[in-house]
Structure formats: C-alpha cells, structure tokens
Amino acid sequence: MVDRRGDDAHVFTTKRSAPLRIHNWRIREFNKARTNAGLDGTGLTPHKLRHTAASLAIAAGADVKVVQQMLGHATATMTLDTYGHLFPRPARRGRRRHGHGPRKGNGRGTRKAGRSEPCALNVH
Image (cartoon, rainbow, N blue to C red; front, side):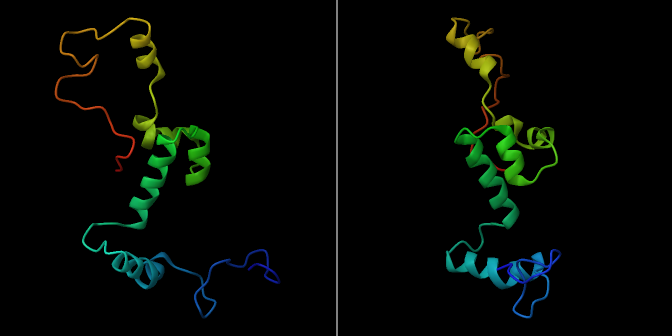
C-alpha cells in the first residue's frame, strides 16, 4: 500500500486520496458495520472498543509496557493512570497466600463494605 508514496503520505485515505478523518470513517464505515452487526442502540463507539481491547489484553496477562505501546501512550504511567485498577495486585494475593487473611471481620479483606473488586472486562 505504501509503494511509490512519499515519506509523509497517508497510508489510509478516502476513495479520492484525501486524508481519512475519524468523523467520515465513523459515519461511512463504523456506523454501518455496527448496524450490520445488530449493535445499534448499544452505545458502541471506536473509543469503547479501544478500552475493551486494553482491558482484554490486561486480563490476558499483558505487561503494562505492552499495553502502553498498543495504545500509543507516551508513558507507562499514563496507561496505569487509566487502567491500573485492572492489573493484578500481587501484594494482596501474597498476603492471603501466606496465611494473612482479611484484617477486619467484614469478610472483604481490606476493602470497605459495599465496594466490589473491579472486573478485568470493565471499561470506562
């Protein structure tokens, strides 16, 4: 696709070789695909798919640096600021593994009552 194109040429363009714009792509391609898949009315957007891809990668055990590169984040800190709650917490597991159970009698470890553990597939 890039043969005989300049170094600054766009790889993906419209039929008329104009730069591909997210708004045009979304209307012409994404929305049609969402409709064809029977997903209208679900609120599905390209950005939600991005979050889902990141969440699935984390759930599959991807390292924070891999997720950072996949999303194009400038730093791993940026990735952790957004998705840190989805990464495993080794300290919590280690405490339970070595016989140190919940600290308080609420049956939920150190979490406050009423809060649930985040699911690896939750998206923002």
